[in-house]
Length: 305
Image 1 (spheres, rainbow, N blue to C red):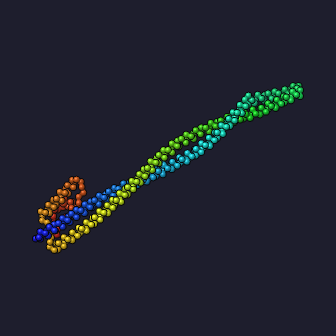
Image 2 (cartoon, helix red, strand yellow):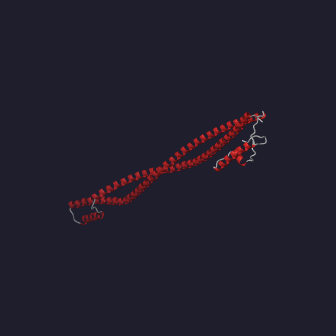
Image 3 (cartoon, rainbow, N blue to C red):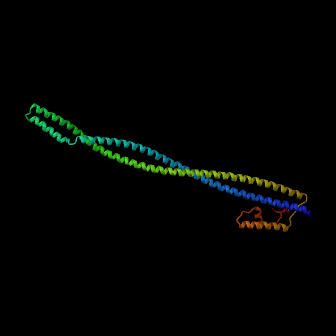
């Protein structure tokens, strides 16, 4: 039987091996937890990217509609100005007609024609002196001048009636255009508000994606750190295993008795049962303690974990 110091050293190495294995298991659990977090973050980022694409498409559509309304508004304003000028000119013409009509009130073309014919008949049928005939001819000439003016006025009046109907149509068209302009301005205001809301949403999504990318970078770094720690622990485990083999070759092999093995396995089993109740993930050693054969040693007589 080996001396007590050797047994104590052997026992501490086995315990250390078990501890290192447990540390590796814990590190792996942390790593798997981080991998799951990375998966969720990537899924969330993919959803945000799709939402960002949809938002950008909405911005493009609404912006095109907004520009279309702006161009339509410009055209209507230009047409309104043109109509306004036409109506302004027509008002001037109506004012001129009104002024002419005031100056020629009582000038009835039919009545003037009758008077002219009456005077002409008088000249033809009456015995007049040369002076009287001359006066009648001058009067006829004056009346014919007034008749021409009266006929012109009549034409102007007729034209004015036609233009008044056109003037009314232009006024109606102008009112319609003004209503369209008012509606367009309202639509443009709404589109501007929608664009602002969509752009705010886009900026928010971009910011969230930047944050998710930073989280992914940080989690990836943590996984790399855990991989490095796991590699370091594996090397440590390899060194401890070499030490055990060298001690075996030297004859200083400590083999825990059955009672110690049973106690160790019972402890691990209780810990595994407790973690199982709490819904925690079990390590390989804990699964083995729960469902293994509990023989305690392998064919070479080595202590299990």
